[in-house]
Length: 176
Image 1 (cartoon, rainbow, N blue to C red):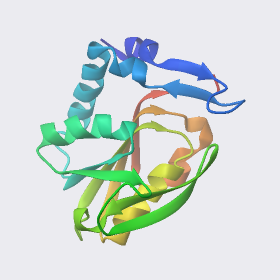
Image 2 (cartoon, one colour):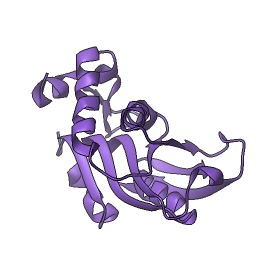
Image 3 (cartoon, helix red, strand yellow):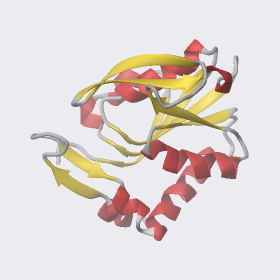
Image 4 (cartoon, rainbow, N blue to C red):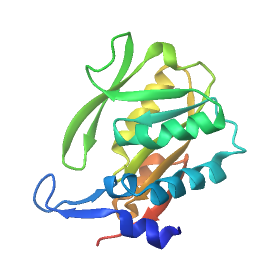
């Protein structure tokens, strides 16, 4: 498995969820065990020596990649969920999507003051979701130093929005 083969596993769905949007569907990677293993192995290679206190996965596909990474690194997994999905006290943050608006939240008890966090999602487009996730972690006194996405759309300028944090992706698409 290599990056080119991983790329072939990503499905492209035009005009979803609305006209003019080209949706990159990561489920093609998930149904291909070799592609999924390749992603997790690449993440482990990238972060095995990093000093994170936790991995934060963004709902919902970010969970799929963040969970095995956290387990293999031996550190906690923090779930960043859509509003109304968590039963305890939460921090909340609203943000703009490429095609709408939303609110995410995290349990207050899951964020440790002074903790260092890696935030993981399947795809990084505008960076709005990840910036909101960073805001949630900072509300609890934590620090986000890195963001990871399997797919990146750098033409949408997410690196500028997420600066000065490091942003790492396995595949980048520009205006396909």
